View 1 (tube, rainbow over the protein chains, first blue to last red):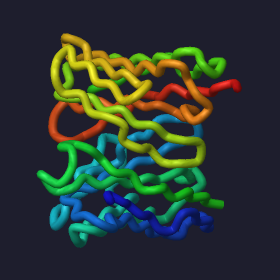
View 2: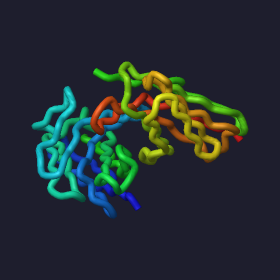
View 3: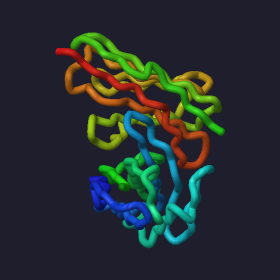
Length: 119
Length: 110
């Protein structure tokens, strides 16, 4: 149980295009999903917290107009990188937190990640 | 803002040797979590520590949470090649927001 999927697993795009990444909790409902980016051999940096049905909360320094987050249901959150540039190339990982009482409180289940390369 | 420091950055051990990674938070935490990320993989939850001075064990892994709830450690006894990966601590000051340490990369020579 507690599986999180991400799609696509990797994407290569041209500079200036937009890319949408999907994060799904497959066997549980997630009230909260998180989006991280991870540069090679570095730690995970939280970009934003996404709650179902409400606006995402972005971390300081993350442009909300560039990284659009939509949490349309209890099992799906999407991250759209708008007008992508080479410096946006990174590994984007989502995580999901289950409803209270279903898992260890605070435990996050991570997706497999999406590697974005912007040419 | 909250910062979580983790050392060492990298450790290469002989199979059978012990391994320890340490985390220190700039602020008092409500809880600390530990994750393992295998090369090419994604972080996988290992454990959560909530109480001051708490010690938890999972087979060869021992996790500790400091009395002041600002530091934590993960100790692996008699490492095996399957222990290879990056170990991250992640502190929670309030709410559900995780602040990750830089991670410790563990390599095991057989």
